[in-house]
Amino acid sequence: MLKLYVGSTLALIAACSSANIAENSPCEPVSFRDDAYIICRFDAGTDDIQMFHSDASGQPYSQFDRLSEAMAAQNKTLVFAMNGGMYHEDRQPVGYYQDRYGERAMVNTNDGPGNFHLKPNGVFWLNDGSAGILESQRFLDAGITADYASQSGPMLVIDGELHPQINPEGRSRKRRNGVGVAADNQTVIFAISDEPVSFFEFSSLFKDMLGTPNALYLDGQVSRLYAPNLKRNETGPDLGPFVGVIANTLVGSDTRATQPTNKT
Image (cartoon, rainbow, N blue to C red; front, side, top):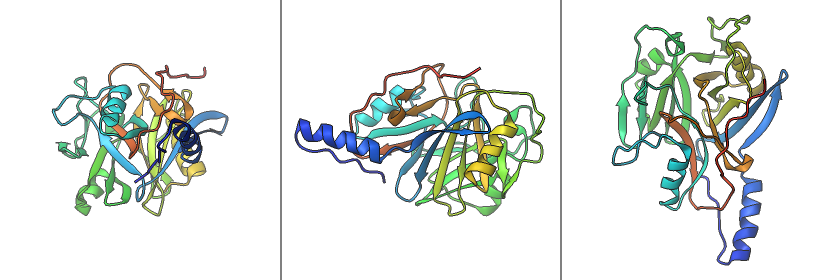
């Protein structure tokens, strides 16, 4: 679990805060084929990666600030968050979703319209220090019991190859976010575009730059980022599931709300 240490005096707190933010800077801007992205890397074995939707009373978080405040009340710091999967108009997950309070929806293998049903879709899962992404049916067949999981779609990269239905000539361009897991089943890489990109461009980021053998699309158009080390706390309409990373000790940082900044 990611730990940030705080000293006993104000001066030491300030010094430690500055040093820890520099040391623990999981998110960074990158450029890939002339498009701008933010990449955030974590270790499933040491970093506390979780899925979030509602608190213990069933009240949805809906906004990054609410989740951050809830963590602060537990003497924890929200280090990172982004959209954690697609959702219905009532903000409930479209597909399988598992967090600390149990399952909210079962694995959805139905046919249907939209990106979620552009099969194969897949499940991002976390369990006992490991992480993975599997096509939905393969996830069911494997009988994996996950601590945290979210089903979304489409898969972006499948066993090192791009999803066969992603068109290199596709013209739909949106802000998009997704997740990839390295071959070690521990390194988890989240990505969000800072400008509208196509499915092909976004999936190619995971395959050709990040080298993740499997990657999953999480959301698009409404995608937002919470990354205090970059002073990013993006606001907008209420969201459904989040994926986030928390640390054990609250460290002061500037997390003032910002609007997404898309290049045109």
